[in-house]
Image (cartoon, rainbow, N blue to C red; front, top):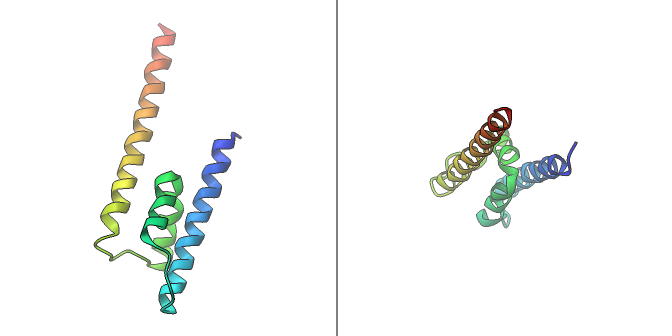
Length: 97
């Protein structure tokens, strides 16, 4: 497997753990991890890990300031993935001609 796959898996694991830890801090009314830090992990590829933690721990699921930013990042990543896949398909078809 490529190094990119391992990077992606580690980043998603960290995003999951950081989101879960922030939920633990929220429950105990302690100093929290900033939204900027949480969203930074999402931007660089930890979206799935963060989304899983948000779902399991019910964290940040009702925050009106956080969710649009998170969904925007998710939408951009899906669009980027679609573009890359489409580009590879077109490149493959041109190579066959």
